[in-house]
Amino acid sequence: MLISVSSLTRWFLTATLVAGASLVRAQSNDVSPAQVIDALEGTYGVHPGQRRNHTKGTCALGEFVGSAEMAAYSRSPMFSGSSVPVVARFSLAGGNPTASDAERSPRGMALEFRLPDGSLQHITMLDTPMFFASMPRAFLDRILALKPDPATGRPDPEKLKAFAASHPESRGQGMFLANHNPPVSYANDAYYGIHTFKFVNRDNQTTLVRWRFVPGDGEQRISDAELKSMSGDFLEQALISRTTRGPVRWHMLVSIGEPGDPEDDATILWPANRKEVKAGTLTISSAMAQPGAACEKINFDPLVMTDGIAATNDPILLFRSPSYAYSFAKRLGGL
Image 1: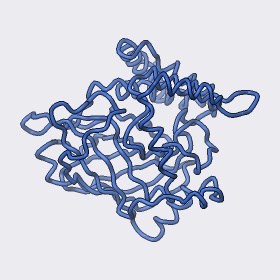
Image 2: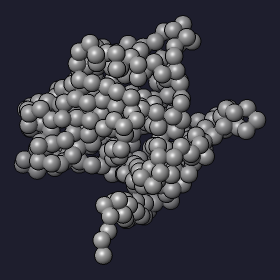
Image 3: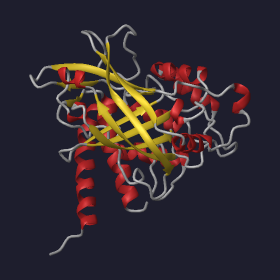
Image 4: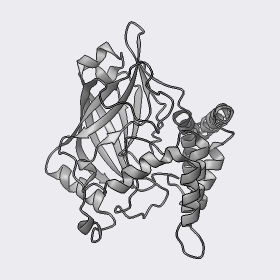
């Protein structure tokens, strides 16, 4: 009996999300990927064939050249010193494909590194140094609190206050967003891995790390006055325009953990004095609208990793993979 590639893909994704969901439910207050995806759809609506979160996005292409200095910490081929092709996606948090770029919400950078041996490395980041949830339950509660009131078309302020009161760990990201206007371009934004990962070297020594990507063009944010008159799609337009004038670069900086640094809670920052090593340079050479572009169909699962990089037991990090798979399966089915 012949089985189509699409059937095999869907079978694999279904098997993956069922197994992954079972594992994560056991560790994450019994919250399932289906509950989270249903909540996102309830809050932002259903947009068939599109991502359920970070729905609005822009594609880009480029390369990454890793620093040989990182070989002391990780044996990943990312850090061979050779050029690695990269497919990137820049995005706005939330499930609204027509959201305004002027919103005070996180921006994302997702990267797929296509390594010489055929393996892939995914990195997903936000432009806030911390996350708002340490457990999947808190993530679900936040999405439910954001559901628009039918009478006003906007989230109920009392529900948002109740969420903040019951989840004090969310205040760090909330304060960061309140004190930082959106960037003038995706190219003028810094992006943070938020989670802790493990680097493993050729001697099987493990080092806890966190990383961020710092823009070569420098960080630049819109003024309060400019914010009132900006186009709802200025971020994509600005990035595409910038790449037509020449390559855009980010430097990958890796912070080296010390004993006692939190490794399983993305809401808590590490001390600012941690040793930092330049791990490489990302160069984006072109950017384009998402429909039909290379990034559109990629499921940027942060647990797709090469040998030499490993996950910690961060409940949010582990929950992302089955949740992304559930959303991806829906997209494949045109749902």
